[in-house]
Length: 368
Image (cartoon, rainbow, N blue to C red; front, side):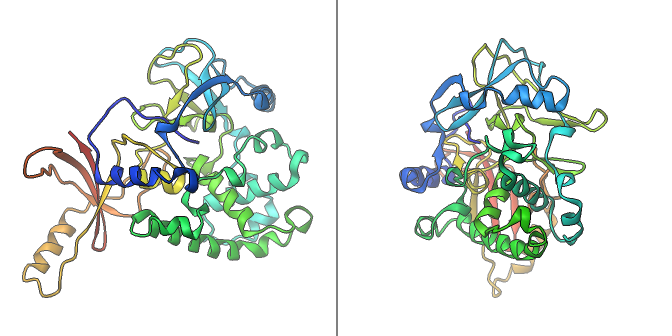
């Protein structure tokens, strides 16, 4: 899933400047920037029967206001008629979502408590992928991006990653790949118990399924779930529309945050994500990202006479971890800084939050 830019146009942050530099190599690195977007908005013939299939499977109407079309980077959802702010534009029952509940019971019993929800859903998706058109989810699985179409940094080659070796994204990519290798070794014994379905599962198969879940699933009280049709919606960082879960009615729905004309692309917000997170998890960046972050290295030498005072200040201003729109939490503590200005007061930045991990500070800034 990719996105297009929002309406605001802040000044460039350091993080945005970095990704502008990276964008020059986008053809080689195989990731997208919003400046490349071209809306085609014609019907997607390959998915023409997708919504009717989903509604037959659900037994209820999922949407009468949207259809699947194409933009230059892939599929998207468009308004089939005028949409008014406050309209419910889609409603997907839990019964037609893929969650850890879809795991084969025997496979689930073989997994220990350390296997996270995203990994469990990835295993469930692997089963459906291997079943091919024998799968009851074949219409959905066939519409998901193939391995060669995935652009998040865990799929970059070593030479491509070396081009961003000084960045936070590089460090997190290496860490994530190492963790995925450990996860694969942990779940492999369980997979091998079902050779008739999961024969010859490779690490590439696993990271493909994992990345699909990581980039498309939404959180609920039962963990994370893939939500067919809803996951064709593309991202706008300034949109107020998100996927909502009604635990009483057991449905996920999206409410329009503005008016849309017929055949206009409909967008939602995946989360208040920086370009680093968008590139790491989704494989794209925004040129005007109001949630962008700048990472600042802060070292407090042991011989610093004010070392204890500085550490105490950092500790004093810690805040609880922040939860994003998907239900996922940041892995750092955070604290608030009011304003930072340059000497000439040009490019003055209001710093809305700062996340701290050890001596590394990550600033989320909105430039005036």
